[in-house]
Length: 549
Ligand code: ATP
Ligand code: MG
Ligand code: MG
Image (tube, rainbow, N blue to C red):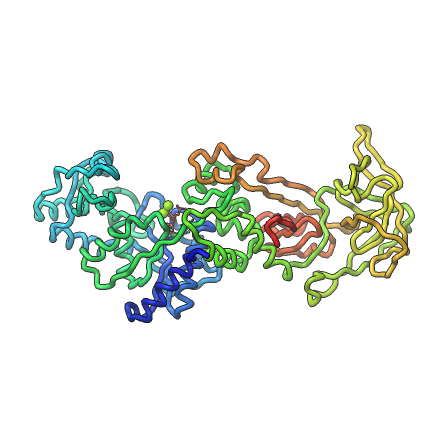
């Protein structure tokens, strides 16, 4: 098997502790508060928190809030909520913006050593003069400014004397380096913008490649884990730590970022779905966000198990089948979720030989795979609802459910036989007349004859009205989520809403309660729109998958 990311990093930590390179493990999860967390972040959260946990170390939560334009308090709040919900506790909470003063001081250290300079090229000119993989870059005409001039200009940048984009601070490294990241990268830019934490105190903001290593060093992070696209930035990370003369020396390690089939996995794109109202907010159950998965009905346990599993099947740019995620929620709910019956597209059935006005209580196990959950009682009477597609007037070959003259078992109840079909003026089937055989009661030991089909039902008078929301992937094409024009690949059937009924014993169902509906799969009570008078259920996942063993 290929070396897994989890094991690879675990091995490094084991060695570092053994050789005394570090005395304890300190990791961090460093989200930028510019969106809600998604399942990719969950992978990073699990990796960082569990790595530290395994070696008795600590994990910081650090908001990497160095880009004022896109950041918001709402995201700061939701990110904390999601991490807690996933079941992790950070040792300390930090904001990178609290280090702005120290970062500024360290920039002065660089300038004084002749390792940084104020450049007046435009962003485009900088891009053009940085060269390519095969061609070296050209020196900026501002590269050889004196230390005094740089100090003065940088101070004036801080004071707000220049407009956005007029000047930047650049590292002075090597314009001919084979690693383009080392060709005098920008360290600071001017942005006259209000910051959610520092207000209007700053108008220069550090770039990621400069800020991130300093943040890690300031906090005493030992193992700084990021995704593979930063592997080429590692020499710059080390350069910043060294040249800024940071007393703590963290090490960066990279692992494969998670992609999931049929899924958009970038906060920028997810925000577009929210802003364009393609979905009903960041927590729409179709979103791969932690809050969307939670509202759909995923449990923290299932997400954590999924993250552990994919940690072990790492390869570069690996895309994980969304069915793997579904596998883990089925596994988690199998023994936990009560089983019950729901009819999502009702068809009335009148059992003509059942006494009018009579109601009997039938017994059913709440979860046959977990007897400890006990039994429930379900009413049965002369009128019930079954599923529209459990009846075919002209059955196709191999159809074993209800059709005229055929007999099926009602789950937990009796055999019924279809005697008559009632239609409206347009010829639509609106009701069935059936007869039942009292001898065939479930659990009675009746063996007189067999039927091939078992269908579910709910008693009509006591059934609770309910709305069912069935989901398909938002993105049609398996990998379209990664492409730029993903908005033209949206699945028009990503949400289907049906009106039906559930058993009467579910009237007390609370937000986020989870059930297995016989044959339909696992469902969650919607946390926003469900009410006592109208239950709303989100389908978490159907019952079977080709992925399950
Ligand atoms: P996005 O591109 O979706 O906005 P990001 O990397 O910009 O993601 P950050 O808030 O900067 O988001 O990321 C916080 C942490 O989560 C980083 O350490 C990053 O490496 C990690 N992370 C983000 N996306 C993924 C992913 N798809 N798989 C694994 N880790 C991820
Ligand atoms: Mg980011
Ligand atoms: Mg990003």
